[in-house]
Image (cartoon, rainbow over all chains, first blue to last red; front, side):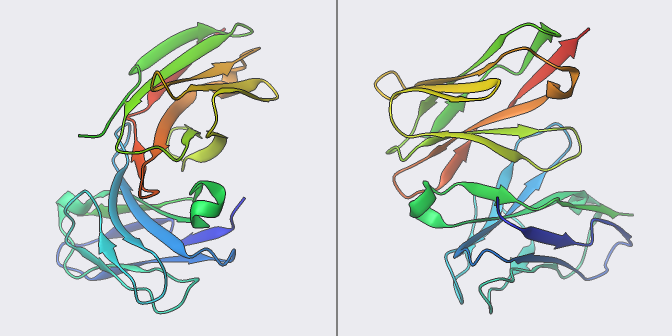
Length: 114
Length: 109
């Protein structure tokens, strides 16, 4: 199982604030992902990366941005948080086709915007 | 379009057996995954099927029929801790995961 870490786990911030959710993995996985999930609802892919300097938008339109400067690090940034951004954000990584693209998730970051 | 269907909710009794079905229509197929997600937690990997047949892992088994676009997750000797959502996901021709909405499994004593 992949070692993948997210910080912060829980955060309450005010509207208009800038926030970066950190994600790091120690397995050397090339592929990394950010999903958004509201309680009891489906997973929605918002960003993914195939490797360093690669970033792609996912299926769900998001006002967040990502960067991939190092293999192990894939931070997600909200420039100006709004109450509609309140959700759980899940970072994930995979080794790609070698494992059928089995995805391993971090513990998640719960964001509340007030 | 790509589609994954699984029941929204199922209820079963502690100690019993439950089968959670998943049907899919995707552009290409590179494997099917089952994940378990407890409320408020991240999904955890349960199983991966890429060839037809049954894969057994302790109390959990997963079956795949590629010709029918069908899979099921079988949970035996149910325990209260098995109460969770079970997510079916298919890896398409580009190795992108297409996720189902999940099946919420409620275990009653």
